[in-house]
Amino acid sequence: MNRWQYRVTVHSAEEVLGWLEGPVAQVPPMLYCDTEGICYFDAGDPFLRAVEAVLNGPGEQGWELVQVTFRSQQMICFWKRPKPD
Image (cartoon, rainbow, N blue to C red; front, side, top):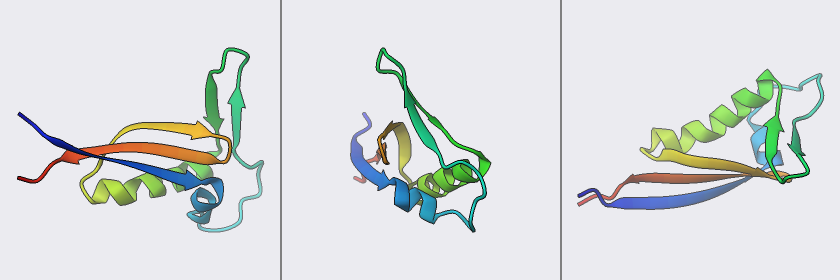
């Protein structure tokens, strides 16, 4: 039976944008929520690359992304990996 370690990371919008390689001449990413509370993250291609860079760090350390959710000015990631024996 597998045993798991879990980790939760919180990343600010500033941290995510810090992964951009240079200035971006487009509208900054936005978080949109509808009247039923369903939210989505709208970002242009450079912003998606910044999110990928944030996710790749723990991924390289063996953490598997279970879920990511966006709040106003934050990205929250839930990770797991097999617990060492």
